[in-house]
Amino acid sequence: MEANSCQSPVSQPPLYDLIILGASGFTGKYVVKEALKFLNVPSSPLKSLALAGRNPTKLAQTLIWASHPDHPPPIPILTADTTDPASLHHLCSQSKLILNCVGPFRLLGEPVVAACAETGCDYLDICGEPEFMERMEVKYHKKAMETGSLVVSACGFDSVPAELGWMFNSKHWVGPAAPNQIEAYLNLESEKRIVGNFGTYESAVLGVANVEQLVELRRSRPKRARPAIPGPFPTKGPMIDHQKEIGLWAVKLPSADSVVVRRTLTTLTENPHGLPGLNESPEQIEKRDAFWSTVKPAHFGVKLGSKTLLGVFRFIAVGMFIGLLGRNAIGRWLLLKFPSFFSLGWFRKKGPSDDEVRSASFKMWFVGRGFSDMSISQDKKKPDMEITTRVVGPEIGYLTTPIILVQCALILLSHRDNLPKGGVFPPGIVFGPTDLQEQLEQNGISFDLISKKSILA
Image 1 (cartoon, helix red, strand yellow):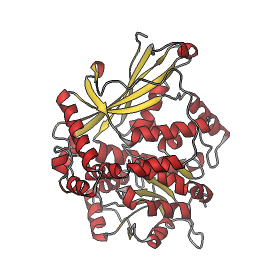
Image 2 (tube, rainbow, N blue to C red):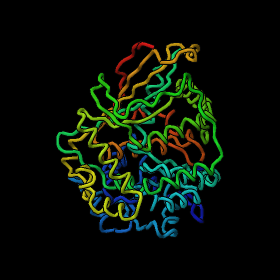
Image 3 (cartoon, rainbow, N blue to C red):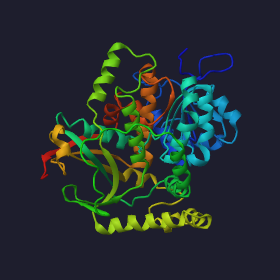
Image 4 (cartoon, helix red, strand yellow):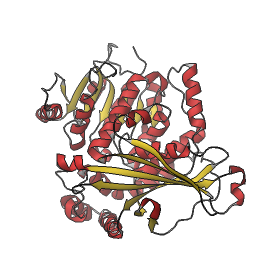
């Protein structure tokens, strides 16, 4: 039996390769649809699958929807509730891996992480909530390492494109060149109107409410190693950034991506060769070492871009609504009661239609600035080199996120011996050395080098 598999009282092998928890939710149903593409396919490790949630009727309806126009396959439907720890432990005893789609994670995620960490079951989720991710690391990392439970959050649009995107940009800085700063510019596009996931909006609102808890959590933790980045700390720059070459106006986005990338950089600084696998071959160790030797640290940030200045002012207005009203209970009630009004039409409770999902896409530009010769960077006030790369994919919440989550799951099932035995980690440090980027490219998410050039220092 595999060392990472969930243990039942009689040590029987798990019944399922993975269980999708919260499968009937807005994002969960698209995860089911994506997973079915790889179920019992000859080249796929996914041979058995189950759906889990509170309402078996809704789960059955999800399976019919996800299977259309085909007849739904005979997939077991299991009842589990995040308020019932016994049901979650039973769930973990039946599967190698849990894909958790139940949010907001601040409110509903911890019991699932706890059950996985206690039983040794592997766990992936689509969380984009920094406070939850960091709290889970503090509370369950040690236990997960002991039991062999690999717990990885942010395995969706938050934050895999950002993680793989900065790595992809970083690897184009060939010695003696090195980056000082890599900024990501996110542009959402649609032939129709852009409508976001209400869960994402709710998480943002609750994130404002929990910002003090996050600050306290970070203060309570011992200081960790910081990466050595050549050159001075980047200047703050203007509030609204105009990137003429990529045709975007942009404003800083307080997303999880920057936090997740920093966590990966911190872990990499403490483990320069990456994290050792459960049972790696000498060839795999060499491959992992070679991969991380090409990745260079840099200051990282994310900005939300628009092709028009008016679009940026809309971003700022929505951010002000959430930032001001999210600080108290009445304000949060208003924000969550009337999401379409306070988000200026970007979010609504019923989510986007299938047509709106299909018509949407994203482009994420990574503009790296650094030094052509790292050895003299300390003597230069400004970078003299710029490398621009880009990640492009379909709609972020219902198409890109399920693609990424399922590909992470398939890699975990196929190459478990090459991944860490257990612990709570961000996705980059776990999946960076794997073939995740190649798998995403085969499933509609592209990575491209746009330009390399000298700039005036």
